[in-house]
Structure formats: C-alpha cells, structure tokens
Amino acid sequence: MPPSRQAALAATLAALALVTAVVLFEILGTVVFAVTLAYVLSPLRTAAAGRGASPRVAAGVATGVASLAVVALVAPVGYVLYQRRRAALAVFESLPETVPVTVGETSYTVTLAPLLAGARKLLTAAAVDVATAAPVLLLKTLVLVLLVYGLLYRPSAVRVAVTRALPATYHGPLFALDRRVAATLRSIYVLQAATALGTFLLGTGAFWLLGYDSPVVLGVLSGVLQFVPVLGPSVVVVGLAGLELLAGEAVAAVTVTVVGLVVVGFLPDAVIRTRLAGYTAELPVSLYFVGFVGGVLTIGSLGFVLGPVVVALLVETVRLLADGVDGARRRLDAELGPRHPDDGPFGLRREPGTGAVPQDPSGRRSAHGREPSDETERSDDRDGTNADRDETNRD
Image (cartoon, rainbow, N blue to C red; front, side, top):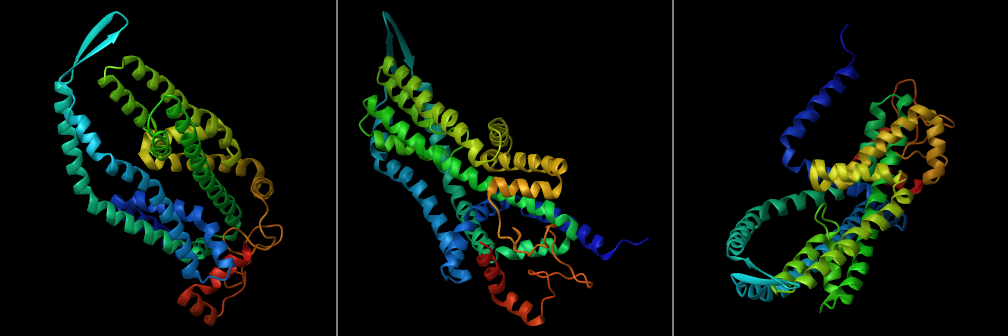
C-alpha cells in the first residue's frame, strides 16, 4: 500500500530537517538561542501590541530591549578592561622572575619565569583568536537579532503550521509541552538574573570588607560573569588571589580565595538558585540542577538553558502519560495560571472540554476553527495582522 500524502510529506520534512541541521551546523546554537529568547520576549511583544503598536513595532521593541540588556551585560566588562589596560600591562611587565613567599617561619621562592613566558604566549594566541573570530561573531549576532525579530513579528505562523499538520487528538499534549517550555525558559532567565544580582551584592560587600579599592567594579564583574557557565565569578577571585600572591601576601591570597569562593562563588548558587529554582522553574531542585550541570558539561554554554528544558519536557511527558491530557491541562492551569477560556497557547481556539482545534469535513482548520476565506489568507500572508491580532486578544 503506497504511503499517504501526509506521511510522505512528514518523511520529506524529517529528511530536510536533518540536511538543514548538517548544512547550518555552525549556527545551529545561534538558532536554538534565538528560539529561547523569542519565548522569553513573547510577553513583552504582546504587551507592546496590546498598547496599539503594529506587529513590526512590537517585535522591534522587544528585540531592542533584549539587545540593550545584552549591551548592559557586556559593557561593564569592556569598560573595566579598557580603563585598566595600562595598569594591567604595567603590573604584568613589572613582575619579577622570582617571588619569595613566607608562611610563618618558613620561606619559599617561587620561580615565575616559565609562567610568564607561557602567559605571554597564551595572551598572544588569545588575541589572534579573538581577532580572527570577530567577523564570525558579528555575523552570528546579526543572524541572532534577525531570527528573534522574525519569530516575534509572526509568532503564530509556526504554531498554526504545526497544529494544521497534526491531527486534532495530538493538540492537547502539544499545548501542554509548549506551555511547559515557555514557563521553563522564562523562569531560567529570571533565575539567572536573580542569581547574578545576588552575586553582585554579595561580591560588593565581600570585596569592601576585604579592603579592595573598587568593590563595586569587582562586584559588577562578578555578577556579569555569573552568566558564564562553569567559570563564573571564580575568575575574579582567582585573579585577585594571584595578584596578592605575586605581591608576597600569602595570607591575603588565602583569605581572598576562601572568602571569595565561598561568598561570591558558592553562596549565590547554593542559596539563591536553589531557593528560587523550585518556584520559578516549576521543577524539583534536584532535577533542575541535574539539567543545569549536565547540560553545561555536555554541550557548553547553551546547556544552562537547554539542560533544564529537556528535563522539564521529560517530566511533563511523564505527567501526561500519568494524568492524561485533561488532567495535565487542569494541572498546568493551576501551576501556570489559566489561559483565556477560548484560546489555546498556540493562538488557536479550543473546543470546550477537548483542547482540540475544530475541524471541518474538508480537513482544513483556521486560527478560529473555521474555514478561512481567501481574502483572510491573502491579508494574513501580506502583513501578519490577523495572526497578531489573535495573539494580542488572547493575552
């Protein structure tokens, strides 16, 4: 028996998706990151559209706010490095070849010549790598901005296409998984921002008590580096300890290492992240940390987002199997807040009690469960106004 038209198209789609992933492998992480940002920025875009902004303006506002947030994170680090470049070079050039270290009544001599030679080679190689990667980084940033804007400009396009391609019986589970992904992604970014803020406050206080001249600058650096997986604010602490050790202050180096790693490096993750993880991510703390740590160690920087999302999807799928679609919908309404009584999370109207999109005998479905007229389809293809109006009314 020959395969149906829908089965053939599904197989073709799967094959083309695989080929696309291979061809676009170098920017695959950028695409995934753009999708996560579009999920997080969707409420801001909807709020702007609800105040009368056109779809283009609403998408532009949300994308611009995200761009400014990224600049606000990167700018302090760049400013500090630029302002302190001469002092850093002077300290590096004035380092002696040997440093005496005294602990109690015992003295040691640390030879720095091999370390300095290796550091010079490392810095030179890093400068060359940064200069080489700068054009690629700019292109990826441009792709990221365009993708986020495009996803926010027509947020219903992908949703409607996916639901029209699937039978109505699958819409309920699809709605539940979509809501879980959206809630998890937004909570991850909120959780990361809260942890970074706590790191800034704790770092500023700790560095002030330790007697450093610029505690606020060091606190800002620690908070920004919280967004860098694995390394994080520990880079600042280790750097300060190294400077103290080079100055012959072994006690000060040990003090800043212990206090910094505990207060700045450990407490924000151990206290703030664990306290908020269960409330924001709607996941047990243990599962959140399994996803967070496993994702970072497996796929790198994107893992801090994708790891908890994968775990959340696994948990939600298990709950769907245990509760059924209707039970899962009631549980999601209780956890995440009820939706509009007529609208599903994909911008599609639901049949009462089923969660499915109404379907006419011809098999075509519209965003309101009725056969779309040719004029409506032409208008939606022209500027996306109808889809965006549904999105605004729903929220």
